[in-house]
Amino acid sequence: MTKPVSRGLVAMLALLAGTAWAELMPGGKVEELLAIARQQSPEVMALRLEAEAAMERAASSGALADPLLRTELRNITNNGSPASPNLLPARVGSTKYTLIQPLPFWGKRELKREAAAAGADEARGLADLAWSELAARIKTAYAQDYALLRQAALTREVMDLVERLESISRARYAGGLAVQQDVIRLRVERTALQAELIQLENERHHAQVRINGLLARSAHAQLADPETLRSPPPAASLDYAALAERLRERNPQLFADAARIRVAEKNRASTYRNRYPDVALGVSPIQTRERVSEWELMLEVNIPLQQESRRGQEREAERLLEAARARREASANRLLAELAENLSALEAARRVELLAGGDLLPQAELTFQSALAGYENGKVDFATLLDAQRQIRKAKQDVLKAQAEQQARLADIERLIGEDL
Image (cartoon, rainbow, N blue to C red; front, top):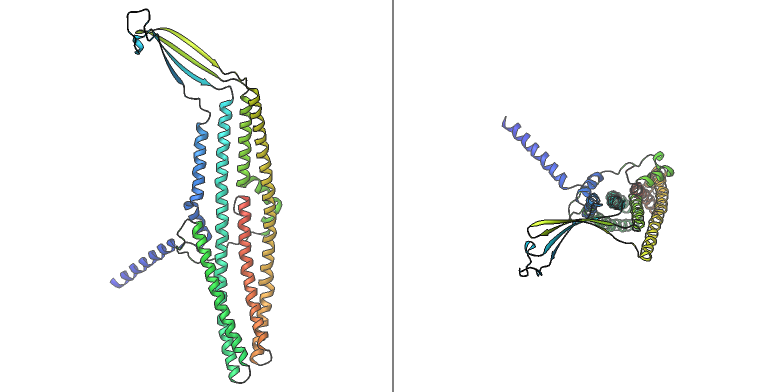
């Protein structure tokens, strides 16, 4: 009974250790990387905190200004009485206490509150924009890492094939059926493949460092090998008109630009309201010795006489509103152009993958098998065999590059429309 229990305990510990190790090494799926980035990215976190701060500021905007308390000591020298000069309120001629509450003109507080709320929306849009851009970079880097990993595996397969061809070439050379140059060319080819493998491993190291940087992790933190790429969306969901409409509705940049327009509109309306005077109300109890002997009411009105400066502020507000509208229009034109470019590039990459994987690769494999049989029988020269092998390799590389390109373009499209397809 002890051995089964021990074995079960060991298996459980191994499972837990494997789970913990997997948690320490994310990267198998792009969703894992995105979840880490959403929690750890300092850039996104800073913008989200700024958006929350803007929301708090909007909640307190439009409140009345703090009231003012003014104290006036009258006749502190006590002229007309035998008392000596004094600064105590009960020992001077009289003391006047004035409580003043400034009151802005009707509608100014509401406009200020609405402008602050629009500013909070702008901050939230900028935070969403930062996240969408970060997510697109992570998706692209993951796809590049996947392609580099598969290219390295392909290079190793080709190296194994070259070693096989080299053994065949040696056997033919020993039998006087081939020249020594064939063996030498294969050695050169293998050396070139080894150099390419080193370069691919270096590029993959750079890709993983880039991913760790995007995740706010140590540059040399371990990442799991990428397992699979996301499936491309169906062609029906890639209609330009439908995506353009989603872009106009959900793009974070356009959302922030629209909020900036609302801020400018409220600021313009508030500037025009400055044509009207603000008031201040006050109440003043007057203390004579030990008692309150009088009460006064006060109304204070500012007189908007400086019309030239106000007209300049109004023209400034108008220009800022026009600039905000022009900026949003420019952003929309640029983003729609990017959408069209990415859709075209995505379709081109898809067609390249179909062409390379569906037509070119099977033909290259048939050509290689035929050339290999012919070379073993002495009917085909070595150059034809090597060229056939290179065609297979190029076709597989084209497929990987096309897949990575599709993922990068898909990430850009999702960045533009503000959501996953």
